Image (cartoon, rainbow, N blue to C red; front, side):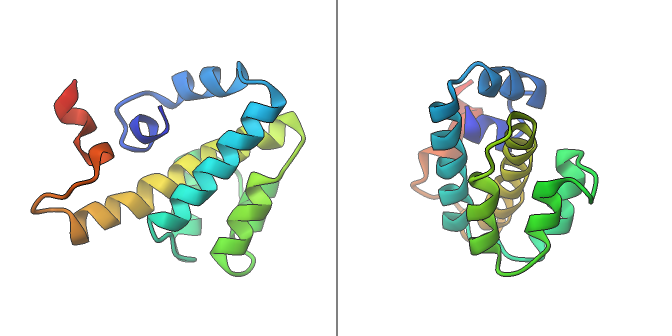
Length: 126
């Protein structure tokens, strides 16, 4: 689900509905999982501004403020740890956008001639 959202293979509205149906514990796990994948995809500080736009957040929303303040790996952890329901939903949208940007760049730079990442072949499966 998360990779399909990040690659634009599923609409964000479907992802939000899926995320909202999770228990609070599952939401926390999902946000931490997303954070981990953003770091693995080599997200950089410069991805913050574009991620805010892609996620449709205002710059004053808590996750948007956090992503622009400091080292991205630390800030992603803070975003993934947000607890209010509305903030979690915003965090989910933002982390999916960060993953989309970072993994897209990774695919272009390192995987354009093929790779062993199964999640880069999702569109071929459908």
